[in-house]
Length: 260
Image 1 (cartoon, rainbow, N blue to C red):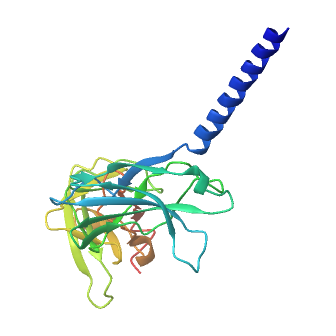
Image 2 (image 1 turned 135 degrees about the vertical axis):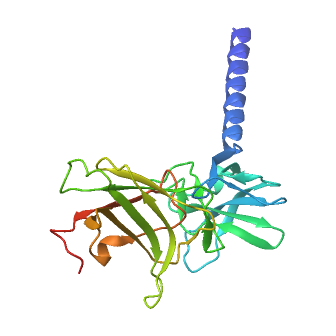
Image 3 (image 1 turned 30 degrees about the horizontal axis):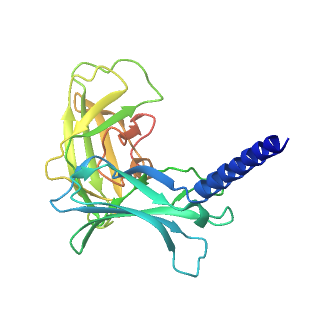
């Protein structure tokens, strides 16, 4: 009987020890947040670039953010780049709000930084998130042709032989002096939709500038289709167009929609 009691006590003691070990392990566990630091397109970074991503407690609007963890990627070669931040889950409260911030520097020079909030962990936010950064240089130098497509909701018939498309991207930031940024002429159109590419050599796009897309289809010296109104020509460009951001607009019959 004494032996049986001793065995029971020993098993109970081992169970208690195991429970305590699990509790300590859970309390001391490490949380991880991962994702990518991304620009609007893939971009090469200068030699010696350093990417830093921080996990911040941003609950108090009138107080500095509290850093819970960070990842520093030395000698990053290009964006996007992956990051991994370890943090202590015991420091996270469901009542608080947390977000990720990222910057890219070369020495003391700030090259890229996020300008939008990327919340994580609590209040319905995801555990992991990519961080989108913008260039501190307001101009994005285009590195590939600028793609676009023109539709017409009024006519789906083939265009006449010899029809030519003239398309221009115009900077209208200064209302007194608009500037043609890039332009192209395209023949052998066939019909709508019309896909086109604008030359990119020497082209810079600023997210702070305003742009319009001018286009007309001409045949035999007569304008058949165009974009007649200024507000219809307006184009929002946060960066140089690419596969994810094409120049898209509608053309209207010149006979039904004369130039205002």
